[in-house]
Image (cartoon, rainbow, N blue to C red; front, top):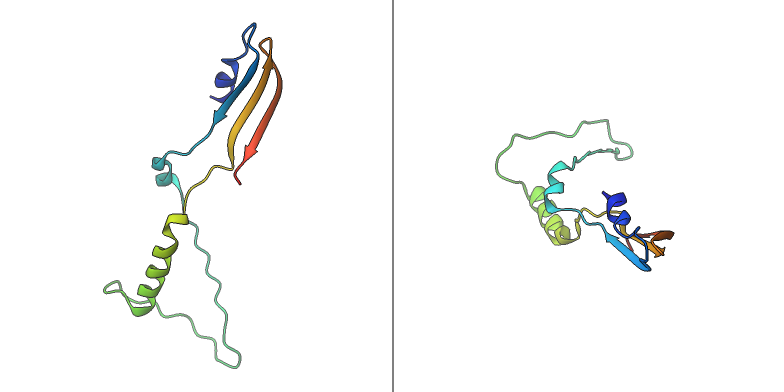
Length: 104
């Protein structure tokens, strides 16, 4: 895909740049897998206890606080591509340089 886009400028008498911008479609978020890792710590001097799991039902106060906090940062939770731009410089249709631009 990137090769064919860059090759579109590899033609005789082409002088200039070709810029290829990468973006992720919103549908790609459906292919994301969340891996959750929990590390519990004990209070000093307390006997070891396992956290109690609860039955699904009405949200607890703790869960409500978590949901509110996530809601506040929701707009920042974006799936981003590390490389956002590829720029090739051509002279007479021959590639001189190929540079990558990372996300800021």
